[in-house]
Length: 405
Ligand code: ADP
Ligand code: ASP
Ligand code: MG
Image 1 (cartoon, rainbow, N blue to C red):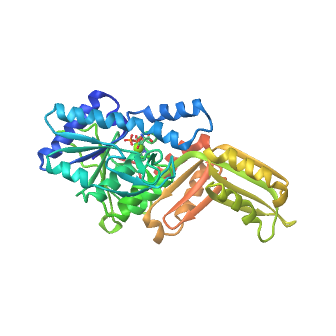
Image 2 (cartoon, rainbow, N blue to C red):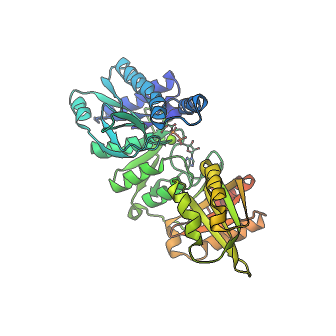
Image 3 (tube, rainbow, N blue to C red):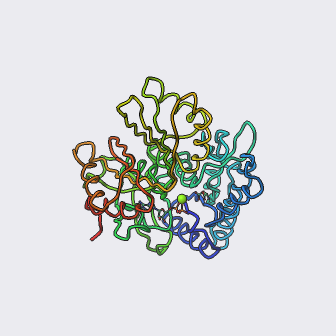
């Protein structure tokens, strides 16, 4: 069972979490619980690091931001004990959850569940601090990137061979799009791993991308459900499952969006072999992810090149290109941060033609200009002005028949 920030935001909510845990114990289950920090806590800790020094040491960042989960793990263990359920907290280094040393966005390498399983034999609930791990060689605390408690939970479930992993959050499942933006969004009974992976990586923050990968690789039956349901009578939520286990397949199952995008355009780049490499290699070497790429060839052998990077990388990317401007040879550079990426996802796109074309028409009828497009087997994305995000999401949601009755 994993409980996110809003679900453990206060001591009273932590008591409510304990009631959910007690229900599962009463049903005869052994339970490991993964908790996030209280809502807003991690943001506060991150801000403190930046305030102390904009160029903070990533290892110390991890030491600071991992503290939020330490508090909630201890508090939930106390709440459970108070209700008569033996419980013990486990920090990342105690479990231990081994990670690599990419501080700030470490990847889990292995989890030793033996101590936790010993605890089960003593009748104890294991309360595990999410988001954090240990780099064994250096002995330092690491964190898994924002939203990383989801990954802690799924990886732990895989390590201790849990029957299932329930991700409790502040919505009662995975919806066809963010229900806070589109009230007509529909909850899904099931969603395929591949679709959930695309939804998460294209901006649906309900699950961390890495958690879906781990669930898929280790075949962990994962449910997304609400901690605000009555602990005595909770709903089932959404099951993330194999494609074959979905009965009523649709062409488009979900719409995702991300406002964390930035666009860069290079004007009058020489149109000759090696130019794309000259532009994108330095960005790759700096660890900057480039997403959409559009190249327009003009008649005189020059081309305009537009691409997107995450908005957090925008200034860095700009500075790198500025430095190599003369080597590459382009006339000028322009950029925009007020852009958003809206994507439609569905396994059915593999076998249906014209799915994206319908979207382009619908968006044009609403006056939404498309700056760039990318497509792959089961999704397509458009880059638009940020101000039109909600309009575009709602337009596509209606277009593909996703609106709830
Ligand atoms: P937690 O703190 O429990 O990890 P998050 O805020 O990380 O919760 O994730 C839950 C939020 O994800 C919801 O409140 C919702 O606004 C957002 N969300 C975005 N896209 C979706 C979607 N397709 N289905 C459900 N929730 C979504
Ligand atoms: N507390 C961490 C964060 O806010 C991890 C998580 O909530 O999953 O990113
Ligand atoms: Mg989350």
